[in-house]
Image 1: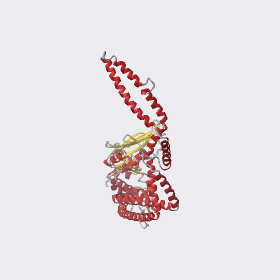
Image 2: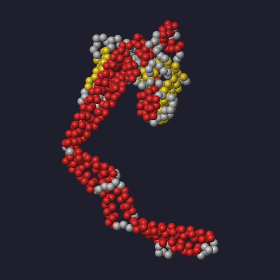
Image 3: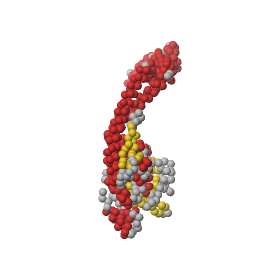
Image 4: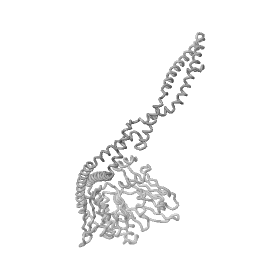
Length: 556
């Protein structure tokens, strides 16, 4: 559930912290006090667009923080996002400056889309815009699918897989047919390219070996000159080569080695150096021999490299790429040469795929019909409890299986009659704003058992209603709050009286600036607030008695 909301320097709020409770949380206040700021703050924290003037006048930045209770389900979602989830709470923060916004989940900076993804699992916000979403037939279909639960979800998954398979085969067929017109030209081109590659007799890694050999041959003259110079300096015919000098040094030390043991040690070390130098001379000689190359071999290597580089420039970055290209084009050539047979087999696959789709889509239709019937019965009962005296409701389902989509082939529309003697018509053609509010509340109520989301926020759920209807709406919110945390903004005393926790939003002036505050009120202040909402003098005994009487009649 939503445990707390902290808002700083946002619009009219300077610094506000509100702790919510389980059950039904009600917010009331005078018109213009800033009740919409609550919903706006939550929406901002969850990724809604921030307007440029949202920051409080005189402040450099605004911030919103939401603290939710954690659960195994939410922890699993956070883990899939690579976000730490070691605490009992989930903290979502947003800092807003004139130039940017920064989102954080549990202290880790994240993208707004990650916040929105998580928000969909934490809280369901019903604002006035959802009146319009109810009129959208796609949204209506989604509601029935949600109500259908695992059975509908399984059917949807099967339909999605079958539709994707069919569409992919259809694309494959279209591509094959598009090539049919220029088949002979395409075959000729493929045969030329394949022949060109096959005649090259490519060997993986060959180009790298040839590059090394080619570079070595290109530099052979310079390498040979340097190696020969080194050889002459070590043991050449220059008279002062290293080998001759070391030999003379050994003879010199030998003459005195019998006199001083240290001279003998130095002579032994020089002899080791003479041996090392001899071994090096042998290796250097072999190296010089290898540097010699046949000019014809150089020319052959150069031409081979030119061929390989030409093939790589046309067919792939590496020899392996060129070989893979040849394999793919060989398979494509085979298909083109046997295009008629290929198209025939593809047509059979398409026919089978369409049958599989229709079978899956039909199962989905049946699941939706089953869910719709139960949904209609329960919603009708719920709407009667919300003071629709003679309501008729059902879900109209039309199916066109020639229309292949991942959502199936059904068109759904909610049909309703809210008055005796009136025909059933689409909801969009019948319901008023107040009726839509109650229908949405009814839907939320019957979807509650299917929904894992802990917190629900209702803004203006009481639009267009009063009296007994308002009382019934309040009772329904109370029932809903036994399974979910409910936060509702209202201006009706009949609804506010049902609260488990009551908050008052007030606007005042301090230090010459307008400020909005949100305050939890006790039982005594609740009586005064309900008296105000009832339209009476909140200090008159008659109004207060009316408020007290209202509080007594809140059982559901």
